[in-house]
Image 1 (cartoon, one colour):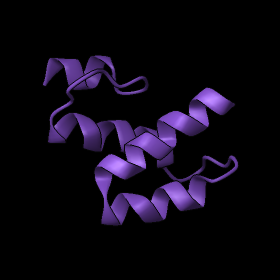
Image 2 (cartoon, one colour; image 1 turned 90 degrees about the vertical axis):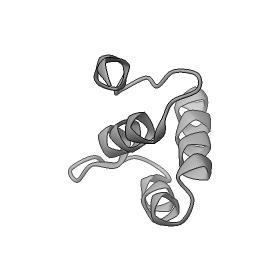
Image 3 (cartoon, helix red, strand yellow; image 1 turned 120 degrees about the horizontal axis):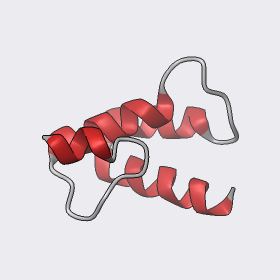
Image 4 (cartoon, helix red, strand yellow; image 1 turned 60 degrees about the vertical axis):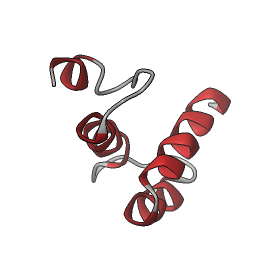
Length: 62
């Protein structure tokens, strides 16, 4: 659990479910506004792994 909090804004390889939830919560929290955030928010409800991949890809592109 310590890793989940330490890397909440960057993520890390082989995250467990809690780490994934914390990572996504940081990325898509209310008040944040950037291109494709609504797509990330919607996808987070349906497929957490795909939402993380989308967030990471968007972060790399930005």
